[in-house]
Image 1 (cartoon, rainbow, N blue to C red):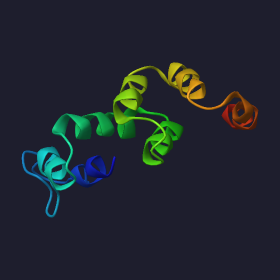
Image 2 (image 1 turned 180 degrees about the vertical axis):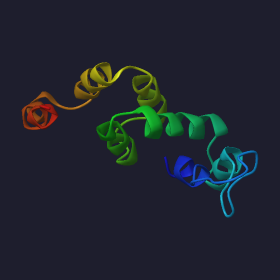
Image 3 (image 1 turned 60 degrees about the horizontal axis):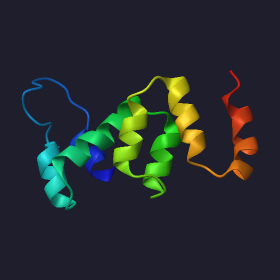
Length: 100
């Protein structure tokens, strides 16, 4: 997730080049001793996943690959899958926050 964050620093102007001070995904992967595909999966989680999913990855509780698979689904399915990742005893405290 950290590699995805530093590789995806905001852009302006010519998008064919990395932003000033920014890194390509492959460079970020090399710096943090991971693969480019892992950085791509983390980017997917950051861009498409529910915030709770990113938090679980950052806490080391869910693998990036698992989170990426979940992030590919629609929001309701993501939340259902995310709930399966946490203990039943904690679900009651979390569910009310999703009432919109």
